[in-house]
Image (cartoon, rainbow over all chains, first blue to last red; front, side):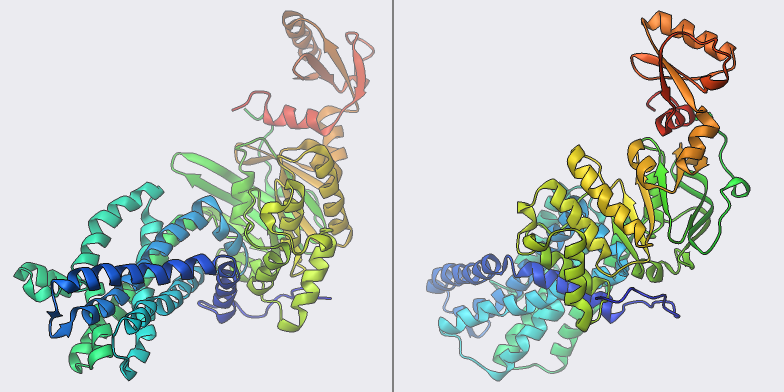
Length: 266
Length: 313
């Protein structure tokens, strides 16, 4: 027989491990019901990208930025996969759980605060992004990318970048009044960021203003880190790239908490 | 408009023992609309209190304030000795909530839904399975443990919502319209479940707009209208106080009913419309000078309509 919950002598704190664990377990148990479809799309999508860009463009362009084009795209697609497996699930998943399934009402009736809920959701999505973001690299290895020890850090890079994009997606869900509003964000923000990140072509060839804009694109920093992890680190430059995605994650995380608190607590 | 005056703390029922919930002067506004307007509420430990009111009376807002999902603009709120909203997390750890709208994870099984909440309610590893078994037993869902929620009937889903709220054996259970939209058989089944909880000594605050539900289950009923408490007390006492012992229900054409109603009011009786008839209340003291009609005992519905108004706002 389970013990009846007794009054606790102390006030419960912020960002408690049991609260984060509870939300993460919920996501994990739910994931067990749909992991097959997610894994399928996360594997097939990068394979198609690599086939289309690697062998399509690759037949026209043999080398880009000193790399074989398949290697260039294979590593760049990691960042794309991180974006797709974090920002989009965060936007749609958060909105659906808040608005249609009312899952968050149930969770917030338990001893879990909005800050913990948002943090755990972002951590969960980031973990998935770290894992699924690495899949394109494995596919690229099959297509001829040489393995290296640095590649072992790619799941971590995917996790850190994924946390930022997940928090970004939760922010958007927190500010959006309807799910149709996401179209503005996808078209005006995510698509340009996705294209001007150095994934499929280097930023060097773009106009100066686009190169400067690229420096503010978190996805570009993720692309650079992944590429350097695969082909050789570049010291301070990589610390700068890492700092950029960490700052991006911290800022979007805090804004996501504010946005969701406004949404969930009236 | 409500006919009663808002209740103040001084005329709330005499409270003995510890209070599980204590609200004083609670106000919640949404722009120009005041959803809860100076509400006082006491829920003694081990009792079942029913919040009864029409749609828009402020019941659900009050329930949300008790879990700090809605923050009051004014007033004091205490739940299980914890001040809200600052200490609401500790209060939520010892409370269970059955929401008005189903928010179960539909692709998970019954047992998986309960298991998730054993983590959210921080039940220790060694107690988790026992807690799940107990909750399944309370809700009579043991033989459905492996069924996905989207394959359950509406009544079973409601029972699962209740089981989920009880999985950590809370001291306080908040039931927000627990039987809304269910057919009578399922409703009665849930009433039995709630009654068993009450018998166990669990404190219950239940919002409802079903009068029979409040009359059957609640030790004390607090009637709300327009965000305010307009009457409070045990159902039988409320009926006796506001509607007397007996009513005469008179049927007739609308014009006829209007004149009967006017005469009754002139004679000092309270009346209420019941759709096709008019009910004259408290007729036991009317010296036999009442129109012919069907005599019946007064009930909580008479009080509800008297105090919350006859027109839908």
